[in-house]
Amino acid sequence: MNADKDFVKYLSETGYHPRSSKHGDKLCELLLRDLIDECPAFRAASADGTVCFDLNYSPATNVPLGWNIDLVIGPPAAKPLEPSKGFARSTPSELWVAVDAKTIMTEHGKARRNRQRDINSFATILHMKNPKTIVGGLVVINMASSFRSPLRNGETTIHTNISRLVAETVQLFQDLPRAPSSGLASGNLNQIDAMGVIIVEYSNVDGEPAKLVTGPPAPPPQSPVHYASFVRDICAAFGSRFGP
Image 1 (cartoon, rainbow, N blue to C red):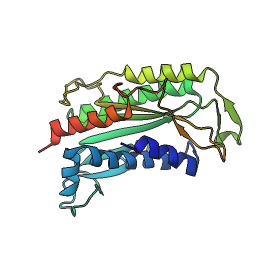
Image 2 (cartoon, rainbow, N blue to C red):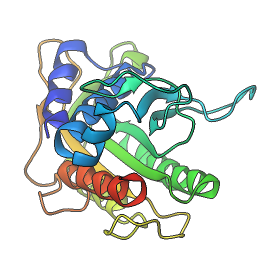
Image 3 (cartoon, one colour):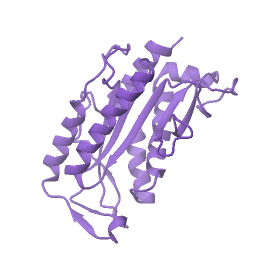
Image 4 (cartoon, rainbow, N blue to C red):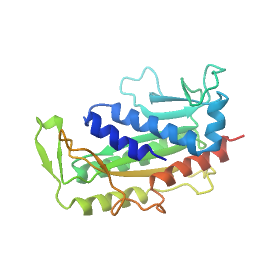
């Protein structure tokens, strides 16, 4: 499972802009690769063309203030798709998996509560439409001591007490209501099926590479919000709800 490591490399190469969707798209593409590599049910579905994916998917049409889902996976609306080694990109006829990919790069005190509410509401809305939909949240949190934002004319924001802030933020997402570890749909609409947290250290300054943080306050491997746990939870739910 290398999405976290490869996303850090991507940040180092491209930089970060809060108004760009490229970072979220890349993270979702890397997640798809890990799901196929690590999950037999996803690998089988991708091989026979019975599942497709889309990025920035809009669940509603003709809505002026509509919203997009970062990653969706489901059966293709137009069948059949050509078998491949990976998911084909197409419009799904039904949402089997929906992932909200978020970042908290600066202004942690304000952003973390907003992101937590976003993901909690995301789970409730999608489960109201279909309780079987596997809803995941994947959050990248920055713990650099400073960050240069392109929205502030290149000014640098200093992050004080950043280790404590990040530890508290990880706990916020770990405390979200969770579906059973069996992967079965629970019927509790506000429960999220999989939650993952990735910690990076990135200043967004040219020449200063991003780093993946694996020690505290990053979630340890046994944590329910560790990236590997996130992938396993999606895999278990997919096998239980939509597997052969």
